[in-house]
Image 1 (cartoon, rainbow, N blue to C red):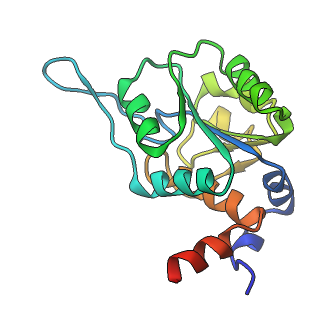
Image 2 (cartoon, rainbow, N blue to C red):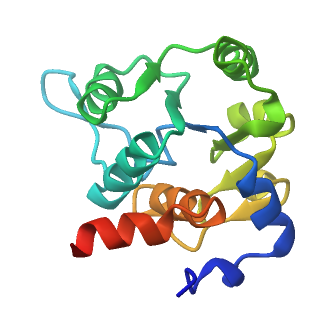
Image 3 (cartoon, rainbow, N blue to C red):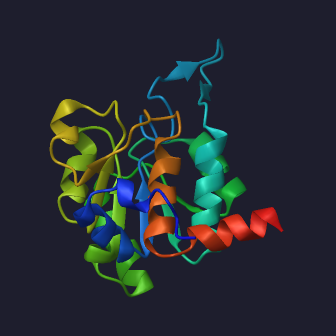
Length: 182
């Protein structure tokens, strides 16, 4: 039986998703809810959704390259990426240049890159990639300029929605489900 939800996506989004080989994610507001929380000693705290982590690992295990690309200095984002077996690029001043470098290293074009972001620092890179995605609660200027918006908010499963779309569009979803059900 074909993955039943694939037809829930617009045809153009499915076509774009079918070409993606590298998925890049902003962190704050995309994989987290966007709040910056500090303890009494000034240490930053972040909450990541477990569903997003599962989706990111599934992408990696099915052959996608996956990277965090964030402007903030974030040891927590670096630790989360390492825990999931992903690349982390923090303190990134120019996200487009960073994504271009990753794509070039992998030997792929920007049309084979998906980028998920939520605010103005993400717009430039999103204008150049094959699939740009924003969480439901992204800033309106971003939401109106992307190829697709998730139903979930940043930090509440939005990343997983992109992962599931990519897996389904490239025919991996059924195999992943079959492996889980074995």
